[in-house]
Each structure stands twice: as structure tokens, then as C-alpha cells.
Image (cartoon, rainbow, N blue to C red; front, side):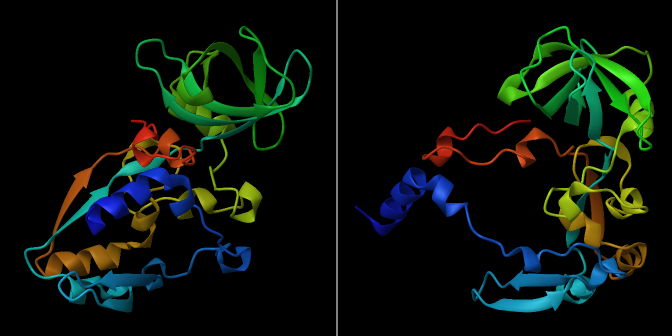
Length: 247
């Protein structure tokens, strides 16, 4: 058996272990840098295999005229939801993922005590804790998600602006929102609303950095890839090819 096949075999059989590691909490930044582009950047030289420690604002010197930078213009929506089950009064938390185009139902990840039943209502609260919008659980989706219909006919962006919080990951201040987070947890080229989390590498670009790249003859193209369920799902299988990748 060749080394390549042995390595492939090991990767298939131990996928979960290969992608699981300990990251000390004290090494996780809790606040963004004042200058986004001052973030550290690891540059890999594919020709030599060399590693170089740089900063994001060095990109105009690292890239060459004629190169192309592709950015994800998805816009993060305030996707974290807080509310209470009308049946029990128990606290309920959810994460908005997307809207089903056919039915208009919201696809959600949800957490609460007990086992909610189909047909139950959840009252979502605004940032001040006041009752704002009721949603009804109408179905189950893939990967343990719920389908819910708001009991008001408004665009999801309008409703989320009223009841949603910034969907910070739990390792940043326990997910607690602070003033200014919605702007800071957004790329400068964000345009199309729909992401439940930021495309994090893009957070380090600034308008001045983009202008400098353009002046150097480095092109830019846009794609829209909404960050959704797949970014929250851990690998729980032994064989990497058995891991379900979502849209």
C-alpha cells in the first residue's frame, strides 16, 4: 500500500479526531481590532512550503497585478432569537438559518427545556425583553432543525430587525451582544442579507485596503454564499466522506 493510500485510509477512519483540537480560551479574542486589517495573516509559499507571518494589510505586497480576490458579499442578519414557549412559559432560544421559498417557513436551530410539539407557539422578545412576534412550530427539517411560521406577514429581514440579536459564536462573550456588534460583525462589502454568521476571513478587509488592492491592478469578484447550518455542525462520523454537507 502506498503512503498516499495509507494517509487516505487514516483520514477516513479518524476524521472526527483530525478536526477536533483544544483552543485555549485565553487565546480567543473577545473584541475586534480597531484596525481590521492589522489582523495576523499566515502566508503559505506553495512552491517552497515555507510559512511567513504577515498582516492582512500586507496583501497588496503579497499579491501580484492581475491576481483576483473573490469576496463573499453575504450580509449577516440578526439571527439569534430569544423568547418563551407560550404553553409552558419556559425560556426558548433559536438561531434563524433561512426562509423556505415555497412555504415561507423559517428554518431554525432551537434550544429549550422539554420537548416542544408541532403546533406550539413561541413568543419572541425584542432586545428590551418585551413580547414582539409569535412564531408557530409547523414542522421538522433536516439535521434536527425546526420549521416555524411567523404569525405576522412581514419580510424576514424586517422581523429579524425587531427581534434578532447579533449571532456571535458562544466563544465570544458567551454570545452576548454589545452595542456596535452588528456593524463590526459585518464585512465592508456585505450586500445580500441571509447569513446566520459572518464569513470571518472577510471581516479583516477595509475600504482603504480594497482601494489599495485595486490601485495595484488586483481584481475583485463577488459571490453570494450565505453562511448557514453547515458552519455549526461538528463532524460526528468516523469516515470523512460520511459527513453530511449542507447547502
